[in-house]
Image (cartoon, rainbow, N blue to C red):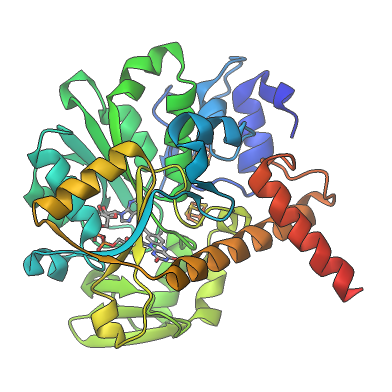
Length: 389
Ligand SMILES: Cc1cc2nc3c(=O)[nH]c(=O)nc-3n(C[C@H](O)[C@H](O)[C@H](O)COP(=O)(O)OP(=O)(O)OC[C@H]3O[C@@H](n4cnc5c(N)ncnc54)[C@H](O)[C@@H]3O)c2cc1C
Ligand code: SF4
Ligand code: SF4
């Protein structure tokens, strides 16, 4: 996609993002004007707009941008890696509070870090994703640790969190922290990098982005159907997880644990996720995922992987260790290597899917083949192709 297509932004958002199946549901184009809304997990244009400098187009994580320029503004150049973005530190971590871990997805690192940032006055409010009746999540603003806990855990469906940021990060919100998947974190970074005049003060209020690792999200409608087929009542689901190396989705209800093989989940994955090159939220201050180390999964699942990316992230993690909010273990070099290899696989696969969609290696839709991270994985893909001929 040529950057010049920005003229008539909303029209091109439809043509190049929505109609191409690239929309991640992040919500960055919603709440800026009355014309764009999210209906369940779909982005809908209610009315045409002929503005030529639409912020909807600018902030969307699936429109072209100079990603290297954004990386170099927010992160130290010497920390940048092609596989997983900036790395200042890489650890295993978990909340020291066992009660918090019990209500969290894994080790409770995300909720513990945000709780600390609120308690220490680094932020005045946090935007997290609250579970909804329709299986999706909705961004909500919370101001204390108890509300953070109520909105912990993951359920692997979409949350238009950036729309909530647009709506709720008003002057009254003070300094704001956001929990974001990789696509949401990129949208927020694009806004902070080049905010529209109307958003400059709001962008300045964004003081912390806690990123989540993300492999994919599930389309709520299809996922609801799958749960019905498996005789799982959504209302009774207490937790959903992806245990390491098992290739199943685990669903816990009051009645116990059920597993759904990945092959059956495949159909529910949002199309946009197949074109996504970021699995670790490269544009966040810190990124958190489930831990992967040898041992009993019931023990491992109570830990997180933690990537420290920015100076702000480093200070927060150091404070969390110092105050005894987080227990932190040095992660071995092999774990970081495994993470990089997994991230590289997602990038290569996404690039392959983008080339397949556009029909040409020269057209990567929203990505630029000259970007250093993209270039590296295009070359990997080309080598594999040549070898297999
Ligand atoms: C869609 C999705 C896919 C994921 N895929 C992977 C993966 O492939 N590999 C991996 O290691 N980890 C993945 N994770 C992250 C993992 O599920 C945990 O969130 C992470 O390990 C942090 O654990 P925790 O105990 O610190 O989180 P908690 O302390 O429980 O906090 C989780 C936070 O995430 C927020 N949240 C939940 N859903 C969303 C959403 N859709 N958008 C934005 N915020 C949300 C909650 O509001 C809460 O603040 C994924 C998460 C999501 C939401
Ligand atoms: S990816 Fe986000 S910003 Fe782009 S069209 Fe979809 S919801 Fe809007
Ligand atoms: S896989 Fe990528 S596009 Fe899909 S939800 Fe996760 S970060 Fe967004």
